[in-house]
Image (cartoon, rainbow, N blue to C red; front, top):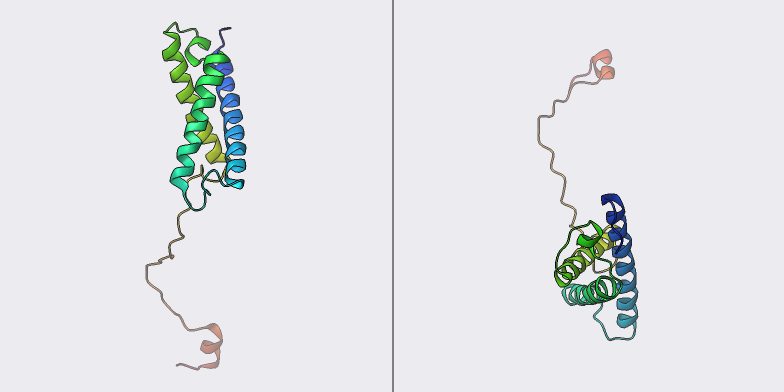
Amino acid sequence: MKQFDGVSAIALILIASFAIDRVVTAVLFLLAWVGWAPDPALDERKYKLIYFLLGGVLGIFVLAHFGQVRVLTALGITIDTYLDTGLTGIVLVGGADRIAGLLKAPGAAPQKEEPQPMVITGKLVLEESAAQKVLGHHS
């Protein structure tokens, strides 16, 4: 594989992670639509597990092994092919999950927290209004 500089290697990983996220999200949508995958709104843990399994298969076997997209090789670091393939798969799936979080994909984005009530503390001083002072009314 051709050696890339750091910026090109990062761009390659981001593009591959984005592709993994889009493909896995589309597959999960279709599987949930036909009833073969859990609804992300009802069972987020199972949905996320399936997301990582599909992303792992796509990242490790398809891109890293067959497509020869490998992080350390791209940076010019010589290492065992299988170790580089596994590491690349982990980086791609982890990157795909972060990109999904940024895109707010169902089941991959972090849970929104319930808004907490606002609490204001301090001292409130009420002064007489100017009109009451002019008219001479005091309450």
